[in-house]
Length: 465
Ligand SMILES: Cc1cc2nc3c(=O)[nH]c(=O)nc-3n(C[C@H](O)[C@H](O)[C@H](O)COP(=O)(O)OP(=O)(O)OC[C@H]3O[C@@H](n4cnc5c(N)ncnc54)[C@H](O)[C@@H]3O)c2cc1C
Ligand code: SF4
Figure (cartoon, protein in one colour):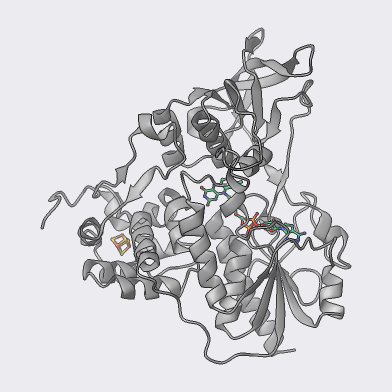
């Protein structure tokens, strides 16, 4: 059946109604069904020299998998994707495709690009429902590799090494594996019990062992893993989980959160659900300071807990670093953007609780070193915003625990681990690193790309040892 004859346009994807979803934690995007996916796949020109592949940090054979979708062979499509990516159901949902594969799609020159992300998501979801798994290694090697952190970087590196036959153990500080996928990105964008858990199960099915509640640098150290426990190589994928604050007066008041804490309470500890023990201060009027994906997630979470929510960002909408789709969804749900605005003080009542936020209006001046126009304060433009909760979402940096407890592991001035981009090699022999721990806060797919490159680097190192 032909659903849509206009090949310049994408097959639209079903979404929950904004008014309804603004009050629940269920997934916003409902995804394609098989018929819609096959129809969308038929828009792909299966280019010989496919530009979309060059936009994907793990170089998925995009026309290859889309061809299988068009033919209705979804299992084949899944096997093609699995050669390149361990987390397709995650990437199909959270990758910024508009600046990666889809931006380079030839269809985007005239009309809309092929909906590559939504097709990837459809294939991965189909595989989950139909219990199709990636293939494990036939021959095992005796060499042991330790992976620190179970975020996308660690899971990808571990999965690739297991496919090569290595004996891999992941050590994770929290009680659940997944990194930002479980404690950061909210349920309404990335369902945990279905999507994330099942992709982690797939990595385990490759033979990877996961030990939770192990903080490397406290419970044990990298040096001990290598010298006493027989690990011949280590991959560090510990992320960038340390929040930044502004240093303005009043920041220690009750009702001020880091986005990390707010989202961890809601996502990992399920504070939004009355059946769980962890509390959360929902707030009536909430200001989220910042403009990245994390800020959008915190704002949309606060909205779902019943608050009126402002995003306070010092530049204009054009410079918002969050994904376009997320900003669009946040606005549709009723989040109010207070742009070109910067907080100068948090106002505190007699009991130590937030009662408001002093802000100043900004305007855009000259371009700075990054090429973005620098925001400058407008004179005499101070005003007060009445809020009872403030969520700081100003970025994060890597936790120094690992570097400070490992001899010879060097970091740069941003506290990021120094590692070779090609193979993840750090300044310490046998230790490799990648993901946010090396780059600072970035994206899921870049962390996966780094995990993949490091798995190759580790394999070469162990073969030549
Ligand atoms: C709220 C939020 C929303 C985001 N939205 C998007 C998005 O839409 N799209 C996108 O592409 N990216 C998004 N990102 C960014 C993306 O999630 C990260 O770039 C990515 O998860 C980095 O992967 P990683 O494996 O390097 O680190 P992480 O995912 O941070 O995983 C690191 C893991 O290491 C563990 N760990 C840390 N220290 C130790 C230790 N000493 N011992 C043992 N374990 C340790 C941590 O507990 C954690 O589980 C978002 C981030 C956040 C916070
Ligand atoms: S560039 Fe676009 S049309 Fe060409 S193969 Fe990739 S997805 Fe298909």
